[in-house]
Amino acid sequence: MKTTLKLILATLTLAALYGCGGGGNGSSTPTAVADSYVFPSGTATITFSAMSTAQLAAPVSGIDFTVTLPAGMTPTTAGGASGQIDSTTITAGSALTGTNLAFGTYSVSTRKAHLSMATTSNSYRSGEFLRLTCTVASGTSITLAQFKAANDPVTIIKAVGYDSATASTVVLTDKLKVTIGAVR
Image (tube, rainbow, N blue to C red; front, top):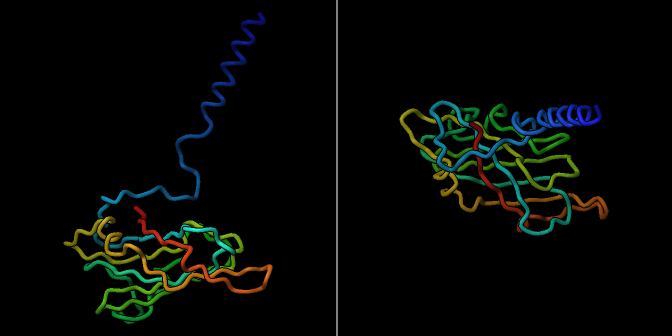
């Protein structure tokens, strides 16, 4: 009887554990997209993430950077040409909490997007901080690897953090790296 009871208990424990974890990917962290990914014609979303290259003296509160978009890929702007990027197509990334701002401008002649993020989060140090949705022209074949190669490294104009202990702004530009990804 004891052996049967132990066997039933072990079976129930294994069955309960079998349902834990794995599959579903219930986290809010997006899965990585391979460099061979080809942006589809229509709309495509590019992600920008920060990672520290040295110890940060304070959490990141703002990043200002530029990227060059490949021919055939354009963000939506207010006037349909060069100018401010439409606020519905540039959003704060999934790693940010609190109040966040994402904004930018685009130049048709240089194909450069000047993008910025600001956050009130007092804990952001790495992860996805910005998403940009672009229009990809039909007949173009743009891979994530090509996009990354054209922006290696991403030009960080300025990155700052707020040090609450000294109530001052800390420049973090040389301590961060911006990486590029995509959303399927």
